[in-house]
Image (cartoon, rainbow, N blue to C red):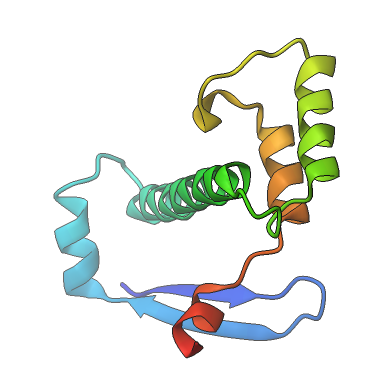
Length: 122
């Protein structure tokens, strides 16, 4: 058995990349996953791994943006807007992990941050 993983840009339809998980890899992964259908379990594991990495990156961007004293990642007004969003939800937080996802998403979308590739190129 071979499992094909494809990454597509849903806006443009462009294939961004693909990879294959082959027999020995599938069998080895099966020793660590419980399911009557290894394809579904592998898909769930892969999806979960990507979303977990994204959650950690979102938290890191939020932490960096809120700790920035130069106001280059978020302006003072943008930070005040975030406080307003939290107040509107009745939230008092002491860590980024306690923030609602909607507020974190707002921070990430507004943050002026460089990608890992841009930072590496510097």
